[in-house]
Image (cartoon, helix red, strand yellow):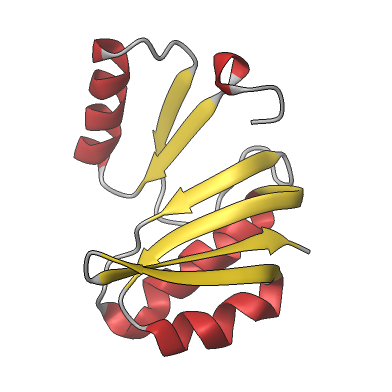
Length: 121
């Protein structure tokens, strides 16, 4: 969000169509007017390199295959200087993988989970 929350545009992507519908329903219940959502299980980004912030909560299974997909998709989506924030469980994996594509890596523990973030190179 370059100019503040008032002019923010939010786009949500989830591979589960029910979750996409929940995001849109939640936006309707709140004063969120510029929210879109789409279903995708791939790294398909409609506007690569144009996002300021990517938030993700990859599932904690699948030997990090899905987490790898989240990291790669965030890298593709973010503009230079954009930020990724991911929730995870395995600090070692995020410590090893995040610096490959991002800098200014921060990893913090919160309520039994870790929150890993980094800035687009």
